[in-house]
Image 1 (cartoon, rainbow, N blue to C red):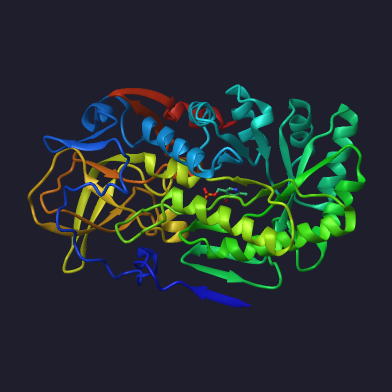
Image 2: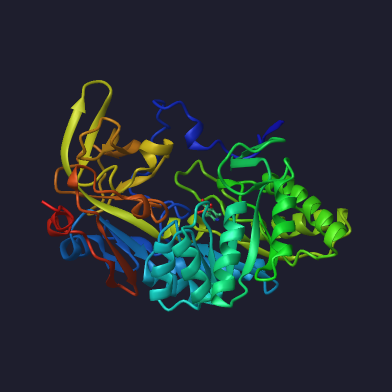
Length: 462
Ligand SMILES: Cc1ncc(COP(=O)(O)O)c(C=O)c1O
């Protein structure tokens, strides 16, 4: 087992001790361009997103509300497409945020869509995404989901267990279809930010273990079933990754499997899907690589590993979720109670919380926030932005510097909440989930409606 830490580059905020706040920023009103959506500006002090004034957005749609800069999303899609080039495929991982509007934007920009449940698949199909451009993932796909995917003509199904290979073949036979299948491989590599861990064994629920020989056996079984078309191999090593080193070890191990497949079956692996996990900046300390260098790094890694095993280079696929949608979106909250806990910090309560952003509580994630409805020259006040749930762990931003004149009724914006916030949202404490508003050229458009108390009561069978 080797643990590799990459000392180069700034420290990630998440490695700071939990209660060790960073130094206050020089300018509380500044919008760090790597953290805020590309269309974020201050106009006479007020935050505007995609040309829309946040006070108008809050007035029209209420708070809390997610606001997505459409042009930011589209721009990132174009960058991924350009950086990976015509001989690669980019699939948007819909688990990061799944709505029909966003799935249409990403496919209009040339990406495919990766879904991991029947629910996400239905959203994609109802958005009229070409089924051939959809990949279905999941470690426990239900028989009905497999059948739906086969009948809909989903382009690739990533198989994850021996039972599933047999089940999929059954559904394919029954439908008279021959789905294309990727075999998900567990490489023993787990990567986060600048660190990865490479083990010889795999202790997780996803995929077929390379170390145990299960991956070789899975390929054997797929190739033996005439109703399945073996399309290639899949590996996903982690999330919020800033460094390509972990991908190198994973690609080396997968290329070893490809070489064994060539030797045993005389079959060339046509596609290598390296999954997603590309990191974004949540705080000024985060310094992810740009997409161009990331793509160049991954392409070079795949070429080198294939050449080491004397293999032709397969078509490369990547599945970014966070990297496409994460930076495009901010959550707008209204400030409520402000409580100074003497000598420690100020607790700023907002009208949402862990039900619209569980990442801080779940992963100890760090975020950047700013007073949005006006600017302020007041001195920085060390704050903790908390929600209104019945949990002391209901923290939205653990360490925030906000102007000392912050007052109830002010609007607060939390940046980079596009990925894994709305999609992990809950109704804890019976809070309705916020809506999502897309903004383009100053024009807002509701893409996910806010829940109402009626929505919550409708599910209560009485
Ligand atoms: C198989 C697979 N692909 C892609 C992704 C997307 O990851 P990210 O949003 O970090 O890019 C995930 C995330 O869990 C995943 O499991």
